[in-house]
Length: 314
Ligand SMILES: NC(=O)c1ccc[n+]([C@@H]2O[C@H](COP(=O)([O-])OP(=O)(O)OC[C@H]3O[C@@H](n4cnc5c(N)ncnc54)[C@H](OP(=O)(O)O)[C@@H]3O)[C@@H](O)[C@H]2O)c1
Image (cartoon, rainbow, N blue to C red; front, side, top):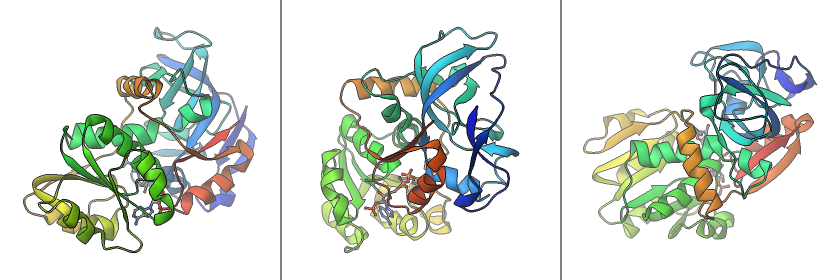
């Protein structure tokens, strides 16, 4: 099969599109014919070796943790799907090796869900990792409730865009940050207020909108942004981050700090698909590129200014 592999860590030029053995589904695994693979910042971080001490890996590595496609074959013990079913999945496995930038990927059947019926494969492939992250952060970690106020950083990004929509669906008041060029887009996703973090001090702006502080702040940027976000959270509120927790956040008194590392979850993917099919969860594709242009996709995602999502098609 055709696949994008890396034989060593490095810049975007280490991504090579070439022939690679087609995976054989093991016990409890389904083989998916990839129709589209989502691109996430973790892909370039993995490519550069930034996760090498944290996650076991084996070269050659096929990157990519987001997939939408059809069931091509089923290993022993699979019961939930049949050949030809349209599915989507968040495909992180214990060893970083056989990912989704390929024509086929084998995955535990328990991590796979039926694709949202109203979305095409490209749109579906853009959802799992980022939307599961938003769900697990806002609902599982922070326990966001109807009527609460939430600050969502990077409302125009992959995770932030889904977080804005999910928080709105939950009935929260949403304050998001984005550069001015993305304000209309982020309001369109449902944000009540959008702060231009490039021209305004977001801490002061949040304080003006929520004088007692927000119930939940969602850090999708990290570093100094996370440190300064501490001051936006009300006493007893929650700060959820998906980046490395900073000492300032760890030492903050009177707030709950949660670090989330997204986990595969087919039941949550099913709920996300239902929301998408009900018109409550949209996805915006900033770029759709062939597998052969994976390096270009990485250059784009690595800018840190993608609006929505990028996907690759075999
Ligand atoms: N722990 C986990 O499980 C987990 C899961 C998913 C992602 N992550 C990490 O979370 C981060 C975000 O992921 P993502 O997929 O959402 O990334 P992304 O789609 O690449 O985010 C891009 C967006 O970030 C916005 N942005 C950049 N700097 C900003 C700032 N200082 N303030 C506000 N917005 C800013 C940009 O908006 P403008 O163009 O308007 O600036 C752009 O729309 C990445 O570092 C990723 O690796 C972690």
